Length: 294
Image 1 (tube, rainbow, N blue to C red):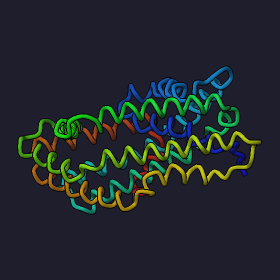
Image 2: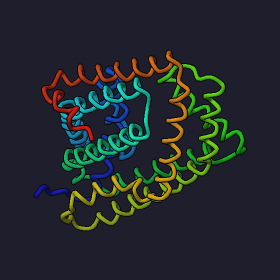
Image 3: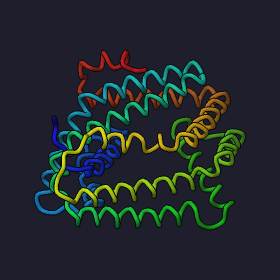
């Protein structure tokens, strides 16, 4: 059985998962090893040989991700493009959400596996650096998303979502922006709920790491996986309510798309699918990826 020194594995897992999820373009993906190494140091304040262990873990993860996950991403993106072309149904949106969660769980598994050598050498200073980083980010999020005038915060959230949607569809009409506005108003508690949950889970992680400063024990990798996979599952009622509103939001928006907007979204999805295929090196596993989609 693979020996994982402590629950510290969850920490590097987050960094690796963030890198993989953010690697949307070829340039970003090819340079993500360096980016996630910097990110890992930002959270852990690496010293000495920890740098080499972190670099090796990230390299292994990236190689696995290129070989195994990119073909699946290509199939997922191409299938999504076909569904957008036909016009989305409720089943389509729920299918996409489920597949994203499956891919996230797979990333966590791989990150825990590959990060084990580094995690054995992390110490109290690394944990203190993590706690400090979490606290700084906590203050920043509260200042930016939960403080000040409520109307201004709502407007900023609407503008943020409009910007993300327009990256896929091109400019939204006034009526389409109103759909976004209604979604924001219907989910007005989401930023506060997310902040409170994130802060609690970060405190739990720091406490687990500090507790594991005791003499090394066998740690079940499934415990580490469960910690991250259940990050959202613990908010089951809140998440179900949000998912339901999100599905309705996407369906309502989809019904208003013009031919040009739909073509814009299909083209972007198809380009990303091709990026993933090329980055994977045309792996033979690509032929089987589509059938693996659930």
